[in-house]
Each structure stands twice: as structure tokens, then as C-alpha cells.
Length: 211
Image (tube, rainbow, N blue to C red; front, side):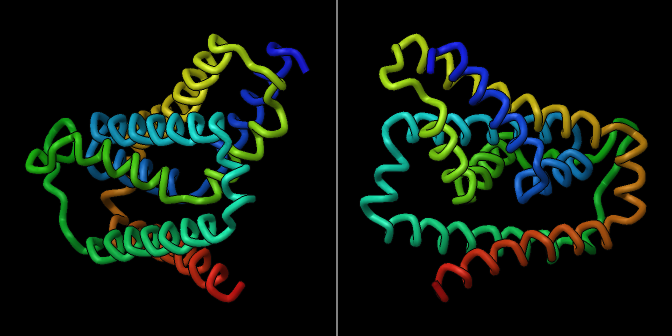
């Protein structure tokens, strides 16, 4: 497989994966609707950075490591599942917490934007399914001897796919219409989002332990 064909194959697979709903989508969507566009974009940036880490790890042979040390993957699934369950609990817990809303949208100035960047990063890297997707896609599409330029271009591509998609999500859901609907039904939306994310995390951790 030549580098151009490989590059396009990986790009297509990762675009489909990024657009699939999951914990990352829930986190960015809720952040954008509750905290505003700027902090939603910071969360999107964190998603992109997390994806870059997976891309680098995959280029270094992440899939081979998981095959050689299966307990490492099992530990990643348990820890990641518990972290997602914790995030779900925190979202549920804050469902009744009122947001101070100004003319330009929600105001949470006491919470620095970098916290949302780190939250996006942590949410991305806590999902072991993302690690497996990257490892599997790279194993399937990477040329046998990729050049340094190819690897650098691929890492950059991964960042722009993930950060770009979640930037679109953050921009769309921080607009006045979606934000107004979120504020109107905040308690229900947060409880639903928290329950879904918590259920995904618990299911992941329990299924790993049972296996």
C-alpha cells in the first residue's frame, strides 16, 4: 500500500470514528451548551491532543504492546471505565446547579479555560476503545516502512480531524438556540448525559472484570 492510499484510508476511517457518538461527544456538547463556545473549543482542543497521543502510541506499536501484554489493555479498560463513570456521576450531581447566564451566554469565569482543555484530554485518553480503534486502523492501513514526513503528516491529520470535528460540535451547540434549549431543560439533559456516560463506564469496567 503506497503512502497516499494509506493516508486517505486512515483519514476516512478516523473521520467516521470521530463522528460516532460517545463519551467525548457528550462531554464537548455539554461543555459548549453550559459553559460557552470558548470553553467548548478548549475541550475540543483537548480531544485533538488526546488523539495525537494515541496516534503517536500507535505509530510506536501500541497494538503490539497490547497483544504482548494483554493485562495492560485490561487495566486500561478498567481504569478508563471507572473514570468515565466518575464523570457521569459528576454531571448527574450538577444537574440541579443553576448557571449564571449573561447576554453573551453562560458565565463560569471562576473556572479557567485550561481546565476544560485538560478535561477534554482526560476524557479522550480514558476511553480504551479509542486506543484500540487507532491501533487497529494504523495496523491495517500503515505502509510497511512509512517515512518520517508521512508520520508527521499523519499525526497532524489526526489532530485536525478530532479537534476539528469537536470544534464544529462546540460551535453548533453553543449557539443561542441550542444553548437556550439546554438551559430550559438543564436538569433533564444533565441527568440523561450523566446516566449514559456513567452506564458506558460501568459497563466497560464490569465487562472487563467478568472477562
